[in-house]
Length: 220
Image (cartoon, rainbow, N blue to C red):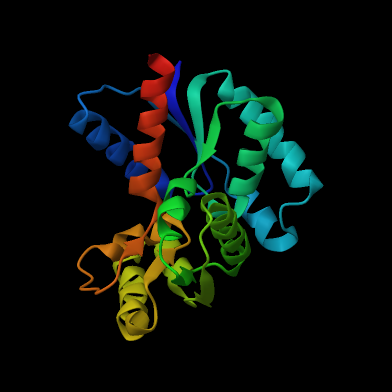
C-alpha cells in the first residue's frame, strides 16, 4: 500500500516528485511509501480533445485502481486535474490535484498572471483559480500567457533552456502584477534563481505539502 500514489503525464516528473516527497516527509519526521504511474496519452488526448467523456472514463478506471492501492492519489497534471478532483467528489475517493493548494494561496493576491508552456493548461488552471477565489470570497483578475517552445525544450531534455525562457518573461512583466502563477509542475524550477519582486506560485512544493498533511490526518 502506497502512502501517496502519483498520477503523472510525463516520465520526467517521477524523480522530481519522488525526491520532493521524501524531503518534505523527512522534514516532518515521516517516512513515506511513494508510487508513480505515468500515462502520457492522457495529456495528449486533453491537448487534442479536451477533458471529454472518453478521457474521463479512461481516467476514472485508472483512478479507481490506484485508490485501492494507496491512502492518497495525487494527479500532478493540471490539464486533467479537474477529472481527478471530480472523481474524489463523486465517489468519495481519496484523490487530489497537485495544484489546488497553489491556487488557494495565489488567490490571496488580486492581479494574477498565469503562465503556461502548454495552451491546454490555461483554461483548467484559470477555472481552478476562479473556484478557489469564490470559495475564499476573494476577487481576482487574471491575465494569461503561453511561453512558446518552452515545453518542447523541457521534454527533450533542455530543462535549463526552458526554465531560462520562463524566468526571462517573469522578470519582464513582474511590475504589472501582484503575483505570478505557474500553471504546470514542469515550470517549478523557474522559481529558483529568479530575482522576482512579487510571489511566484508553483504546484509541486505546495501540493506535496498538502498531500503529506492529508496523509497525517488519515493516519490519526
